[in-house]
Length: 183
Image (cartoon, rainbow, N blue to C red):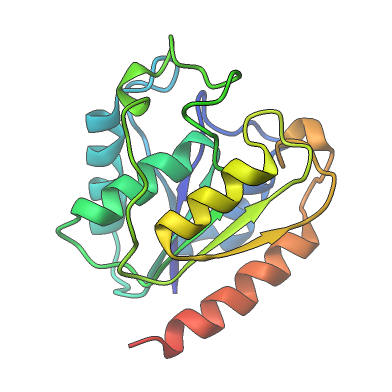
């Protein structure tokens, strides 16, 4: 199994669980590298996902996305040329919500969630400032994925103080075990 890390706007800092997991996975993980971290451009991010997925020897790839990366990953998956085993989507933002960074990421504002053709799991928080519980439920339903709330954990990022986020790793382990069995 290989993991492609798809962070949100500005990437994930050294205290973010994505960065910690990537360090633990070593060569089994690749982080996307778009040129537009600060002012995300959807086409640039899709191309970065293409490169990261293609840049590895294992055909068993799971995208591990956070925040804006969830929107990029799901859009990429709906138009992909390459197959992946699943999408682990943490704290997707509501593109129509009041806190969405529409000025910084205008190419992401017109995306509509469509059913995924691969397994997916959406992990949300009940007090995420970028996505309310109703919006999170709507996204998961539109993507035709399961959704799991982890309670009050903010945006499930560095500011949430999760560190390595052992519970998230356990969720990912269970998800990937199920994704391996999916046809």
